Image 1 (tube, rainbow, N blue to C red):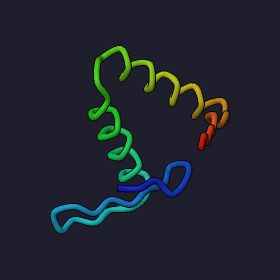
Image 2: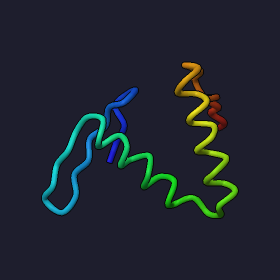
Image 3: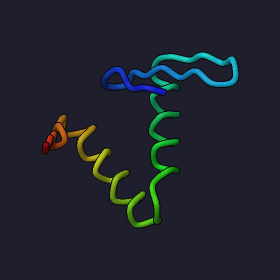
Image 4: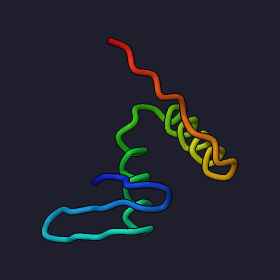
Length: 64
């Protein structure tokens, strides 16, 4: 699974390959499932929704 951009992703598993919006939704769902705790899932989901509708980008912090 990999996101390529806004509303675009690719998914390949068990011989099934998908791309586009449905693959993007699957990526979001799987990413949320792997987060620990319901509070973290809700927080990340709400942040994604806010960023999606306001076109804001997340912080990109790279530390050595």
